[in-house]
Length: 155
Image (cartoon, rainbow, N blue to C red; front, side, top):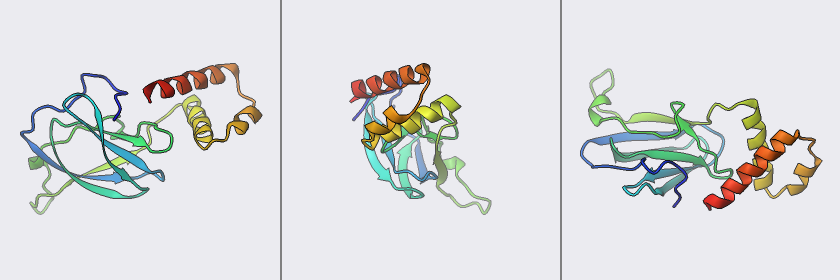
């Protein structure tokens, strides 16, 4: 369990059902978390690259997705949290009830963020020596140190 998001994000009443199909569109393993009634992330499953997962949930139950290796937050519809839609909005053109297809994807990042996440990935693989060989601007080194400290605090 983890709580690296705002404490106001939590599941509420379980009244209106939702049927979703999560699809991992990345080439990375992604951890899927349900945010419980106490704002805690509850690990639901790990999705391999290009995998799909059917979930029966509720409209007021948030979901969060993280890269298994780097712990980076993945997005759904360019948002870091997915809030399910009511089941009655999921009819196809033939009038049949279907699951809402939800694509999990990488967030859009700045060049700086992209560089930092690449470095974090190197470090996650235990390749500390690779960092010393990179000629990085001081501002990136400071930001990297801040991110590493914050990641250690979350664990």
